[in-house]
Length: 93
Image (cartoon, rainbow, N blue to C red; front, side, top):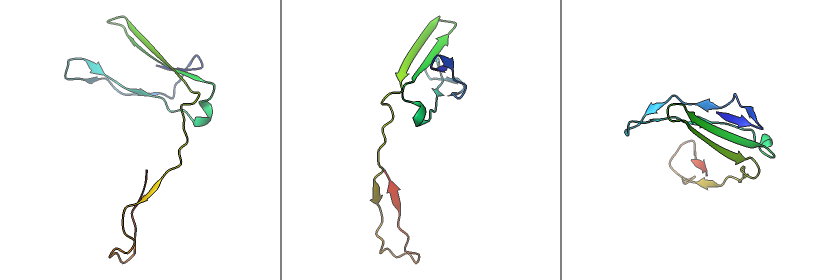
């Protein structure tokens, strides 16, 4: 489960358990947070397993986790290629 500011966060998405080759199960959970809600908040992911009594908690501070990086545009084709519409493939990295 995810909590934000001490309250359960219902926007988290959790996958169904999947059997692994080692005979255990795995699942993932993800929480999408708008950038403006990161600063000053703590996000806690908690995993509990009743059969083993395991209770694992990881806290992530929202301060400084979102870096804004200007995309870089790279030209991957020659604009003089033999294309009647003179299209060019651009990829943002």
